[in-house]
Image 1 (cartoon, helix red, strand yellow):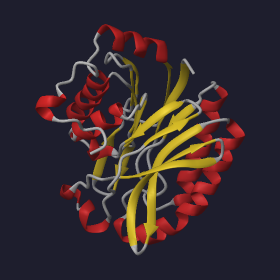
Image 2 (image 1 turned 30 degrees about the vertical axis):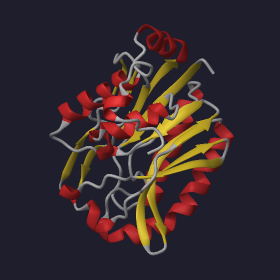
Image 3 (image 1 turned 90 degrees about the vertical axis):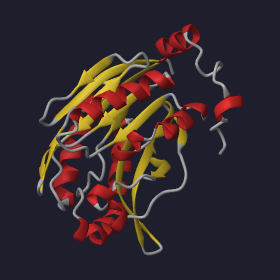
Length: 264
């Protein structure tokens, strides 16, 4: 596929209210599908936000939430990526699910937990990366705080990712870091980036939105403001291949000096 119409869906997550958030997502998915969107990225923990005391309850709802999103994916012809609380063996993980053709084709558990917000006290950490082939290309997935660890993104690039999908709940006042790091990850790995942040207020935290769709050269194709929105842009894979041919960073890496991240 040479052209992928992509959307980052930004909305104010209602803390702890699964059905209200499901309704918002359905409306957004239907709107972007009507525009011909093929790939939609949702925010981090979008079904209920970081309601720590309700995490077990929210995780118990995740199978139902996934069933509903799978049904919409099938009906609307969308690949959908977003993270949800997932319980396994008594631990809860922040897991990004990749849904294609009505089926969960990949899942990634957030590996870098933000201790400043006590994530490490409530969530288990993932221990594997994800690059998954889909009907819109190979997707590499990361979540929010992962953005500050460039080794992960280089690994995703080395493993063949073409689009980086990043659900997030990135709060104010760190907008500069968010925008700068997302552009850097796109440029240095010569990949498209679809980042979906939430907006509005949850508890004591303000979220600034600023979801982004970014081209491999770092151009911002679409950027959200501070309110609910659905960004849409075309990802042109021919442009990515042209950039890689002009500046062959993957071929000119010095693995003999700093090692080969692939497969380690």
